[in-house]
Image (tube, rainbow, N blue to C red; front, side, top):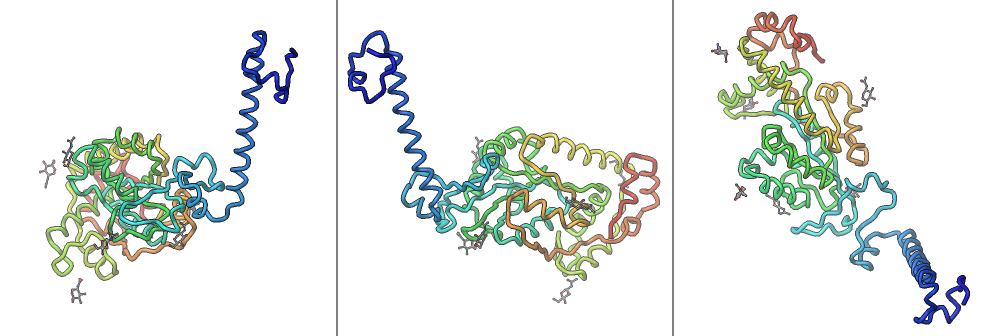
Length: 343
Ligand SMILES: *[C@@H]1O[C@H](CO)[C@@H](O)[C@H](O)[C@H]1NC(C)=O
Ligand SMILES: *[C@@H]1O[C@H](CO)[C@@H](O)[C@H](O)[C@H]1NC(C)=O
Ligand SMILES: *[C@@H]1O[C@H](CO)[C@@H](O)[C@H](O)[C@H]1NC(C)=O
Ligand SMILES: *[C@@H]1O[C@H](CO)[C@@H](O)[C@H](O)[C@H]1NC(C)=O
Ligand SMILES: *[C@@H]1O[C@H](CO)[C@@H](O)[C@H](O)[C@H]1NC(C)=O
Ligand SMILES: *[C@@H]1O[C@H](CO)[C@@H](O)[C@H](O)[C@H]1NC(C)=O
């Protein structure tokens, strides 16, 4: 019997094939299976390619997940199709969703930044979800909270409709993020979460903002209520009237503590899918916002916020004991904070 029998040769298909060529027979059977497989696949692909409506495809092939061939392979880990428990995504079931987190520190412009993002019709950023201590008390609590939020089952004023294309939260370093950073980074990488790190360059300005905000918590300067963010120039001017007295002895240790905090955080998150933003750049360069939308693969939109910046004057007019502070920082590595101002 010839070695090169083709599969139409009846004899070759007889189970008791000549002992000489069991390998050849196996190769033939394998080839037939492979050819059939490729053929079936090519038919499937052709059908998917010409199928214009992903919902129909979903209805017909229930277990086939949503797939958009325009999304490159490298992006697939960051693309999700959540199935919320509390409602149905209906016609947007196959609208891909990006999971994100804004990693920041208090008084670094993240409140303003988040309202900008939430002005986009396809973004839901749910605020400081982990300001609640119970939610961050241990890793299983954190995971449970994130799973609910990323599954589009979180209800807040930022919740959008079923066509949300990016869902996230604002997370401060001191809200369990640093404490559990190893497990959280592991979670972010496993779940394909995009990390937006938002820091402020001028830590002295941040310090002034912290002191002024903390003063208002007690003083309640706006008709007896404390406001961390304001929506009118008038309110901003009332809050900016207070000039904190900065403890000069404490200043350099405080600044280097903040500095180290952000450097450590950058180190923790350097192996995640992330982008680094500085508040100062966002204020002076609106192209940075387009970079953010691009990072989350969102359609470009004009973003807006009602937040009004509180401290707009040069720092020298916003610190009670400016001369002392000036002399304390002059000639140190933090000297640049004294002069770095923006309009
Ligand atoms: C954004 O939301 C709008 C309105 O809900 C929806 O029509 C559109 O498909 C969404 N776009 C994306 C890219 O998800
Ligand atoms: C984690 O924290 C939650 C909420 O505080 C608590 O109910 C739960 O028992 C804790 N789980 C573990 C494993 O400690
Ligand atoms: C979300 O909460 C608001 C008010 O708290 C409520 O009116 C709305 O029905 C809730 N939505 C869902 C989907 O639970
Ligand atoms: C305090 O309330 C009054 C009346 O409600 C309002 O006209 C005024 O602008 C408020 N002042 C501030 C500083 O918010
Ligand atoms: C400034 O800070 C130092 C060190 O924390 C403290 O000992 C000192 O009492 C503070 N000074 C004032 C005026 O609060
Ligand atoms: C503004 O940001 C864009 C995008 O990051 C950058 O390419 C550009 O150089 C920036 N412009 C200025 C004036 O810094």
